[in-house]
Length: 282
Image (cartoon, rainbow, N blue to C red; front, top):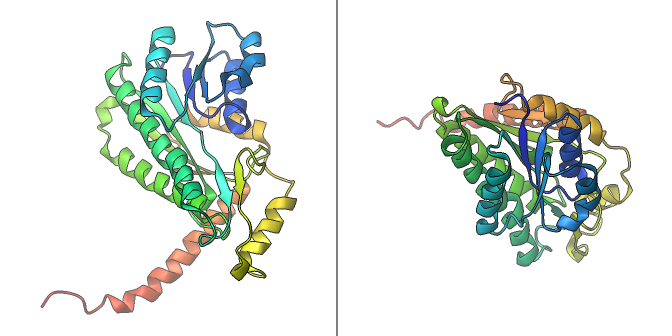
């Protein structure tokens, strides 16, 4: 990678995406900030000139716009060192009470959009960068490791992203010098719980008094979350650290959630063993 890195970041209108763009710029790096509504970054475009900041309109559900955005980045900066695959949103609602339109929309952005960005990133790192190489940061979530009631489709989209990102990392040829890191993010002080990023659906009558009602109450009242600025500081370090693991849980809540999941899986694995003892072929 070059000393001054070029970042390609999706979902930069607000939250971690915007904070990441601002932090990378503050460190002297160059940023390709992509989002559906470029006017949301008008203030940032005034602060940083075109030699460091390129704002590109991008809807990650549109494959041609992805290709065009990478092409524009190459035209302006000549290479890309880090792709931060950050765009995404969620919904709160019971599995049974969430419409197909909402559920499929979440997968279109969180899974298909992220996957298409990842595929283009790998192609770019391998075939366009001279020398080849780059870092792909996949923004997953702690609920992509352990699902929560009430946000099942969001959890499922992150589970899917975890799976394809791991498979992708195992397909890469070492000579390409491409590294993937899956960021299993905890909760941070962003707009993730606001209507722009979290679609709400009415409580399904059958689930009144159940776990999902408690989750709804929690999401409506939670205020203390991780520090976003500290999170992007650490993500910035991760992007340059060759020792960072494939699965990287970020946030004490994420560490606790993944630890709990590992314990549950170990228990389930031990309980599963008796059913497999006599399955060898005769």
